[in-house]
Image 1 (spheres, one colour):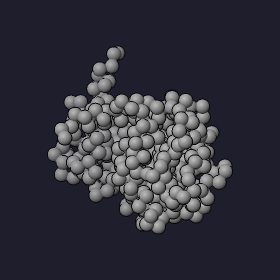
Image 2 (image 1 turned 60 degrees about the horizontal axis):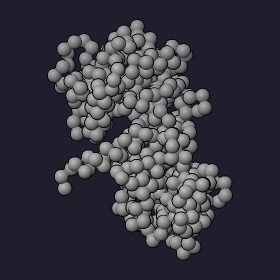
Image 3 (image 1 turned 180 degrees about the vertical axis):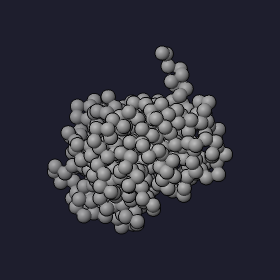
Image 4 (image 1 turned 90 degrees about the horizontal axis):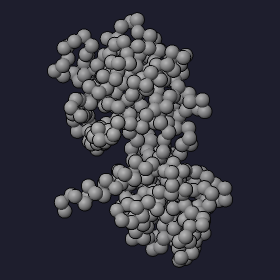
Length: 213
Length: 213
C-alpha cells in the first residue's frame, strides 16, 4: 500500500497555500503525512513546483497545473509493485488511521476503488449557467466524499491517462468503468478550504487538549 | 408578501426540537421570526401539534407529519390576497433581511420561485442502495440551497397538492414546471441540524459581541 499526499495546491480559495499553515505546532501537511505514513508502506508527497523541500528526498515530487496532473506526478514515483494506492489531500489533517484501513480493506475485498462519504444534509440542486434550477436529485442518493481514496493500482494508473480531469480520483476510475464503493466518512475529516476551517481545526485541537482523559 | 416559518420539527437529528433552544437570550425560532416579520406583511408560524403557544394568536398553526404537510398547514392560514409567499426554516436564525429582499425581488422580477444557494465545495456522488457509486455530477453545476425561499403565491399553492413531498418547497414548484432561480446565499445562514451547529451559532454571537463597533 502506497499513499500519494497531494500538497501542490496554491490555496486559491484560502488566500495562500493552506497545507503549510501551523496547526498545533506542526504544519497541516505534517498531520496528513504522519497518518498516511503509519497507514502505508510508502508515501509520495506532491509539492508545488519550486518548493524549497523538493528533492530533499526521493519521496517528494513537483506537482502540475491541475490536481489530476499533480496526482499523475505522484503516480510516476510510486513503485510498480504497489498493489493498492491511496490518494489523500494534504488539507485534511484529521483523517484517522482507521479510515485509511477501511478504504484499503474495501479494495482488498474486491472493489476497484473506495471513498469515504458522508450523508448530505443540505438540499442540493442542479443549475444551468443562468442560475435556473434544472433538477433536485433525491438527497438520500447523494453523498459528500472525502479522502483518503484507495484504488487498485492498475485501475488507477489506467484511469489517469494524460489530460484526464475531475474533482476527485474516483471520478476518473468511474469514467473507465471501475466499481467504486463508499465507506463511512468521518465528521472531523474536513478539508481546510477557507480560513475559518483552519480556525475550526485549531479550536478542535485545543478543545481536545482541555478534555479530561 | 407573507412568510411561513416552519417550526414543527421534532429535532430527530438534533435530539430535541432545536427551534426552542436558547441563542443569546431568545429562542432560535425568535431569531427567525423577527427577521421574517420585518421582511413581510404577515407571518404564519407552524408549531408542533400540541405546542403550548398554539392558538395564542391567529398566526400560529399546528403542523403535520412531514415538512411539506406542515407548510400546507401554514399555507391554509395565509390570506388569499398574498402575492408572494416565503417559506423559511425556524432552524436558520441568521438569514438576513437582505436575503429575504433578494428572493422576493427575484419573484417580483418574473420567476416562479427563488432560492438562496451556495457553491458546493465537496465532491458529491450519486450512489445506489448498496453504496456503489453511480455517477459524479459536475460540481460547478451544483448548489446547496437554503431558506428563505420565495414563490408566486398561486404557483406555490398549485405545487402543494395533498401528498406532495420533497426536502424543499422549490422541488415541488419545479415538479409542476415552475421556473426557480438561484440568488446568492449567505455563509452564516446555516441550518442548526446537530448540537455542534448550535454551539457554532452561540460562538458567532459572542464573537460579534466582542468585536469593536
